[in-house]
Length: 142
Image 1 (cartoon, rainbow, N blue to C red):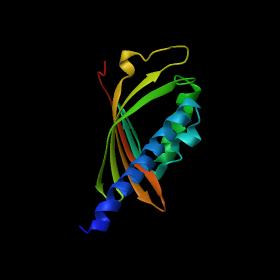
Image 2 (image 1 turned 135 degrees about the vertical axis):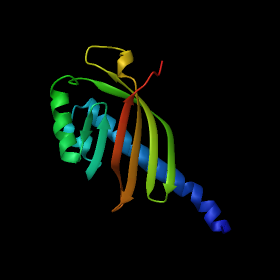
Image 3 (image 1 turned 30 degrees about the horizontal axis):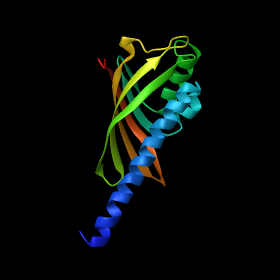
Image 4 (image 1 turned 90 degrees about the vertical axis):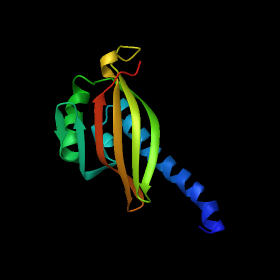
């Protein structure tokens, strides 16, 4: 590694991490707005999503499911998300681990059964970071 690479790598890593976190923050801002279209915007067309008991095969399938959820049981809800780690196994790939809890409409705190651990796989292409895969599973966070 040259001295120039040593000086630029941390800045590039910080910029990439900031961009990846911004994607995830945008997903949760869309959740709070109950906007299914904005929610799936950063998902690649062929992104896959795994949640307990469900497998969404692509962005459109996820959009349809989120639209129904935002009109039904998740209407007025918001998700509390906290990034636990961001790793870059390759220059254009990010692995993100988060904790998440859902606060339903009319409630001040998340219910214990809403706590989850999430893993995200993002990749950079065409000047943007895209969600390629998401997996969420129940967790005990308290």
